[in-house]
Image (cartoon, rainbow, N blue to C red; front, side):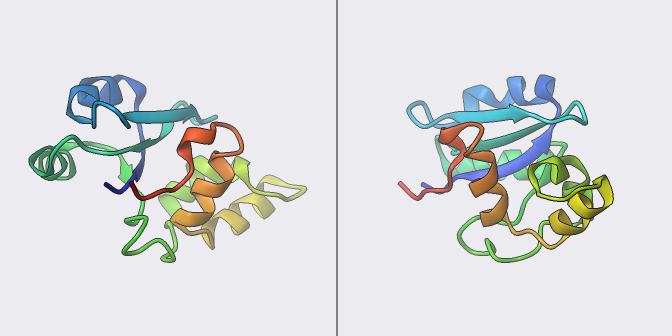
Length: 119
């Protein structure tokens, strides 16, 4: 199983909890934007397909297959506080170059169960 990452509303995340893997589940941190950064694994492939075709939110590039791809400006806007810099603009610039692996590493310093792993 591979952990995925998304930025989404907490209320929407709650509706998806039954679809996540019963043992590995999902874990999140609150973001200053009011959204959450959530890491999750699915119980079954059909749940994963359903989630990615209907869930609102911003999905980070797949951690294994595209973990070195940039996260994109929309996600960077929500997670820039995780990056070093003296100004918000410096943090946003650093976040805009980040990858899913970078986000997982930084978020796991806040919540260790957000670290990227393959089960």
